[in-house]
Length: 415
Image (tube, rainbow, N blue to C red; front, side, top):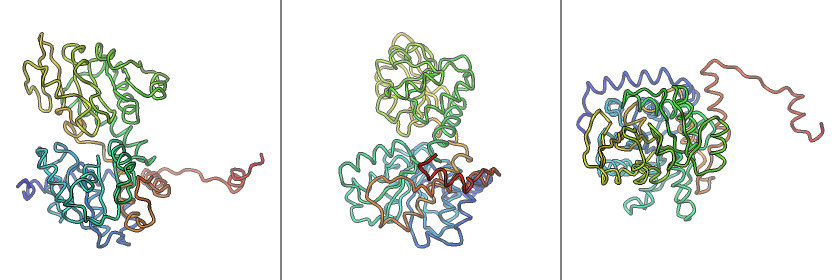
């Protein structure tokens, strides 16, 4: 464990960041406040594998307020904010996270939260769930259930579900309306652009900005890039999404064609090697590559390493690859998730919705896991709705309720 975690000065800085996030996450704090007196997680151990950011600190302290003993690891080796890790450690959280972990240290940190024998696991990317199912050391763990935050993680868990070997129920937080409609679109849209700007300090306006995939994440990135004046190009494999992107006013091209004209490329697919060797060969001099997906597999960095004749770190979080003939390609954050490597991740306001789902799902698992199938389950509709209600309340927004006459009309087959 990094010695910085015990640094009181660092913990003090982390408390300031925590306070800032707390003040800007009223939807989450309202959610916590409504059930804190019940202590629904009293006596439960909760293993948390999320990006260790100021927003996560509000969730983690909320879990503790509800009675949980929390074990925390990072969901990415380069996403931890060390001041937050130090602050949470000072608050009695069992923290196994620091920025710049090696792959071995990252995996060992996940093992350490599992060695705490959690009852519930909150995951982002499903590395923790995978470790439970793959490694014999954890074959005897008795886990009530878990959650999953990301599209990538849901894909992995659905594959596990098909094998029939899933050991406990999972709630797919990513599939909640109040998660993917807001976190994926507005959160990732803004924070990915933030990461690119912090890393490069380049002008977006006037550049050809290629977004690989038009899922909810891709929609958000495309929308924000266009808002900054970029000429946005979308690549897709799904005909419905490709058609939607076109109807939304974007140019749609195969990646092989987009590679010839793009200035900035962002992958947001959850897929393997979306931008690869043949595309690097087609690209113009000076292009910028960034990844918004959870894992660093969307850009074939291995091929880029093989093709280079020289590599240099030209800015914090930016590597310059010089290819044969002198062409330069700039890679942000080693191909890892740019919004967390080069920036601070999603804004607190939008993470309040996602983490409200995480928190209420953990409570639901503590109370109802025995009634659930060992598969990927949707967030219960009442939780999703409550998160929306809490968020509107926190924003001071009131909405209408249907009249008795309208209720009767909607329930009748007669006009």
